[in-house]
Length: 437
Ligand SMILES: Cc1ncc(COP(=O)(O)O)c(C=O)c1O
Image (tube, rainbow, N blue to C red; front, side):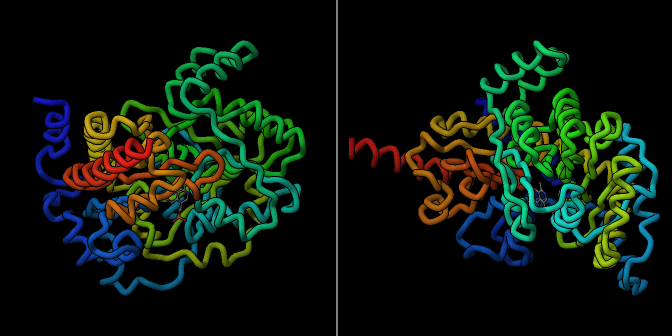
C-alpha cells in the first residue's frame, strides 16, 4: 500500500461528505449542471474548478431545514434586531474559543467585505493615511480598499525557516520564546518588526486576516499580543477578519484577537461570518464585533443601512450554523484534514517541484510553483493548458508571483484528478525547459 492509496482510502471514509451525501453526487460534472455560483459558472464545463473559497460539500441539513422553515413561513422580510444572532454567535465563540463578549457588541452586516469597508471608514485617524496589510493575502482586500482612499502598505509575511529565525530573535526581548517558536512551525508568521516600522511611521489602520488566507495559518497568541501592543502604542485601528476561524483544524489553536486587543488597549473590531465555515456566502449575513466599549462606541457611528442590508435568510442560516450545525462543522474539518493529507501524499509523489507547507485552518492550499517552469502566473497556463481553475498568486499582493491557490473542500476524487492535471502540465513544461537548455 502506498501513502497515496492509504490517504485516499482514509479521505473516502464511509463514502459520504459531512452532510451524508455520497461522493458520487459531488462529481464536478454533476455539480456543473446543478449549481450556478461563481465556482460553476466562471469557466467552461471542461475546466475542473478548484479556485474560489466555496466548498463542494452539501450544506448542513440543519441549515437547509432552517432556510426551508423561513421560506415556508414567508419570513423573507427585512432584518430588524440582531439579538438572536448575537446570542447564537456569542455562545459559539465562548464555547469554542473562550471569547466572552456582551451581546450588544455584535452588529449585523451583509458580508465580511462590507463589514471590513464600513469599519475602516470609522478609522479614528481618518482614511487619508496608510493601511497596513500582511501579504500575500486574500485578493478581496485589494478590491475592498478600492472603495477607500487609504494608501496601502504591504508588509510581506515571514515564511518557513525565515519565520523561525525571526521569532527566535524576537523571543530574546520580552516574548515567551516557546510559544513563538511553536508558531514558527506554521508556514507563515507576521513580520512584527516591519509592521512596527509602518506603525511608527504613522499608519492609520491594519487589516489582520486570522487565520490567514491563503496560508491557512491561525496566528499564535504571542504574535497577536505583540501586534496588539504595537497597535495600542501607535494608535493603529485593527480590523480583524476572522472568517476562516471556525475551520481551524482539530489539534490546532485559533486565538480571537478581540480579547487580546481589549486587554492591551488596542482599538479593534472583528468582522466574521458563518459563511466560510458552513459555506453560506450567498446567504449574505456577517457580523462586526466590538472588542471593547471604546470600539462599541466607535461602531455606533455605522449608518443604519449597514445592518438593514443584511439578508434575513442569512440570519436564519447563521443562527442554525452556530447552534445546531456544530457537529457538521467538526465533520467538515475532519474531511478537510483527510483531503489535505491526500493532497500531500499525491503532491509528494507527482509534483516534486511544487512547494506546499500545509496550514492548520481552512481548506486552501497555497502552492509554490516557482520551480515548476510555469512562469510568474502559473494559474493562467494551468487554466489554458491543463483545464484546471486555480486562483493565481499575482492577485495576492507582494510575494504572490509564481504561486497559485487550490481548494481542497471537495470529493477526494476531485483532488486526485486535480493533481493529475497539474502534474501533466508540470512534466510537459519541465520537458520543454529541458529541451531548450
Ligand atoms: C479572508 C476572507 N475575508 C473575506 C472573504 C469574503 O467574505 P464575504 O463573502 O462574507 O464578504 C473571504 C472569502 O473567501 C475571505 O477568504
